[in-house]
Structure formats: structure tokens, C-alpha cells
Image (cartoon, rainbow, N blue to C red):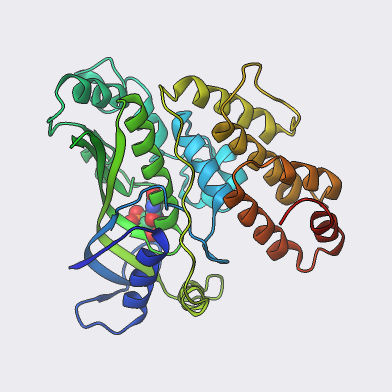
Length: 352
Ligand SMILES: O=c1ccn([C@H]2C[C@H](O)[C@@H](COP(=O)(O)O)O2)c(=O)[nH]1
């Protein structure tokens, strides 16, 4: 059993990687899993006491674009591989038909008629919100993702997340996630990002603050290095980066976030198609416009061949929260090395 509590995600990842790279006699070398050899801690509880400190400040694990893309994939109730591959190349390895992901969390959380359809015409999300609005102390605010029938079929994508258990305690929304299986290097930072965002969305809907985030995992593992993948080496490189300054995302604005989230969902689809000047017709809080700016920057700096330097610089200047600027500049530098012209534009401009 492994337990670690911290107010930021980097402390949690550092503790997990250090343990998995040590030869702790309580851990296991797992050789017969279908996804490859790994080192495993069986039985883990991680607690993030400040769920807004959900993005790693490291060079190697700061995954703002793919985390945001995956979150929007979930909340738009989508299971398309084309959509998620745009943000997470290689996701198709999980697909059985190359087009959809059987285990996609979005439809299971946000569509009617999935899993619990026999007993409810509501989405699982709506049921949890209704339950917690009606009875504050409820212990039934549970979204079930892994279903028994998942284990019956031979699929490349059996959901790794079993339950998302929301509870209101002392007027704060706490979330306890349970995963049967979690890849410590690739999956963990993405899953913590998405689930703490869902926690904050639920908190705003329920007119509460966020409490703590608890991440329980049965098999938390680090894949061994192979010809194609070097996860152990990368985890060691992350540790060698040294201490990372914790950072936190801004607070999601008060009120029901869904009207704004729906605008973000619409705009994301347009930007992904290349329509990067698309903007919502209603005015959004800067919290949300920053998301759209990040999605446009991702399109312009990462997805297109050849970086549109003036356009990228202008977009970067539009970012309101300075935390995101750090991520964007770090990522551009990593992609391009000394991107001389762009960096010159940026340093000559107003960006600190
Ligand atoms: O949200 C997810 C989805 C998948 N995985 C990882 C965990 C495993 O490494 C792999 C799935 O393999 P199996 O547990 O199904 O063998 O994907 C995660 O970490 N998080």
C-alpha cells in the first residue's frame, strides 16, 4: 500500500516515480499484461489537497493541450478516435475498430442510456448532481464507468476508471476516484487533470467550493523501456529535473458552468477543423477564453506544418492567466529548440 498527500501534482508524481524506480520489495514486476512489462505498486492512494494545482510545472510532464483536449472529449460525450488522436497521437491503439473507443469515459458519464439506462433516463452526471442537491450528506454520488460487461469482451479498451465518487462535506465537493489500472507516466497526469476539472464543474453546479481530490488505484505501474518507449528513462529524467515550483489554475467562475462549457465544446470543434478565428457569439469569462486561446495556439504551433510566428505571438499575448504563458513558451521552445524568430518577437514584446 502506498499513500501520499500533497497540495500539488508534481509532489505526487515525484513520490510515485521515485517509488517505482526504487527496488521496493513490496512492488511487483508484471510480465504477462497485454500492454507490456511494467513495475507495479498494487494499492495506492494519492491525495491532492489543492485540486487546482493539477498541471505539472515540469518540462516533461506539463501536458496542457492534451489534458484540455481530453477533458473536452469527455464533456462533449464523444468516443471518436479521430477527435482524441488530434490531442493524443497513438490513442488508436486502444480502439477495436479504428474509429471509436469502447471505453471512452465521456458517453458513460454524459450520455443518457449508457450502463444505467435500464433504471434511469438521466445521465449519470445529472443523477449525481440531483442526488447531492437533494441530500447534502449523500454517499450515493457515484458515477460508475467500468461495468461488468466490459470484462466479458475481448477489447483493447477496457475502462481503467471504475468509479468517480462525489461527496459534499463541510460545503465542499470532494472527489474520490477509483481506478483498476493507471499508467503512472502517461495516464496519471491526464486523469488527475480531467477528474479534478470534473470535480470543479460539479462544485460550481452545486454552488460549493472544491475540497480534496483522492485518487485510488489498484495497479499503478510504470512500463519498462522498450525500443519504442522509454518510460523508465523518462521518469528518471523527470526526477532529474529537480524540484518544480507548484502552480495552480485560476478558480472556475461562479454559477452553472455548462452554458460556457457548451460554447467551449463548439469552439473546440471549429478550431480543430482549422477554423481558428471562430469565436463564440456570447461573451465568455476570461477563464474560458483562455481555453480557446490555448486551443488556437495548439493548432498554430503544434498541429500545422511550420509555425505561424506572428500569429502565434499575437495569440500568446492574448492569454490572460500568466501561468498558461509559461506552459506555452516552454512547449514552443521544446518543439523548436531555439525558435529564434518567435522568441525574438516575444521577448521584444510585452511578454515577461
Ligand atoms: O484513463 C486511463 C486509461 C488507460 N490508462 C492506462 C492504464 C494501462 O496502462 C493501460 C490499459 O491497460 P489494461 O489495464 O487494460 O491492460 O492504459 C490510464 O492510465 N488511464
